[in-house]
Image 1: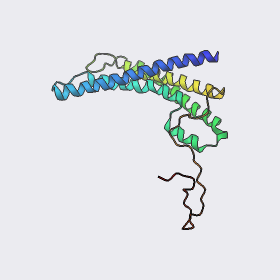
Image 2: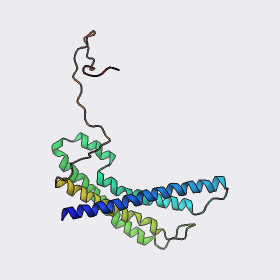
Image 3: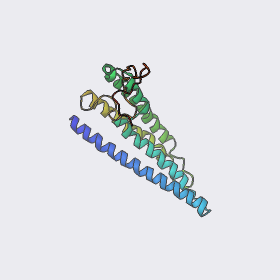
Image 4: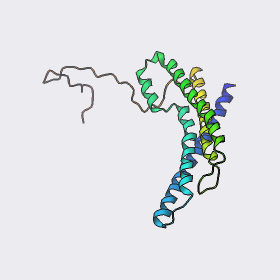
Length: 195
């Protein structure tokens, strides 16, 4: 049963990630088109800036799911290095709980906001602004699924606790200080290759 859940989540997260990549490509392309029409042809486009901004919003909210699934939150990576190994499971549960609360709020209120603005139109495009606001509850729902899956995988031992490929450096023990050969002070370079 869990295997099916993990496969389903992986497929959903892949779809969200691919959609985020497509939105990023669209946003960059539309930004380039906007600059081209404004400064080269001296006839600025009325719709490309709005669409570039809208696709970037979708990119961020859809890409967040992959970020949550991998645990790639920079501030949290630093916390992992400061906490003793015995407390990592409790820390992971606390972090996941906080993330789930915030994401649930985004799903609920994002949905309400989307309904509230459905009669407003995007200038220059003629579509409802609700299509842009829909990125909030949809992206948060994908992220919520990713956080839940990550926590279940860690609590069942399928994944390690913490970030596997952390960008924050691990704690490195200080080199033993020994007296230097000539000065009687510590050089700290014993055992290292000299250039």
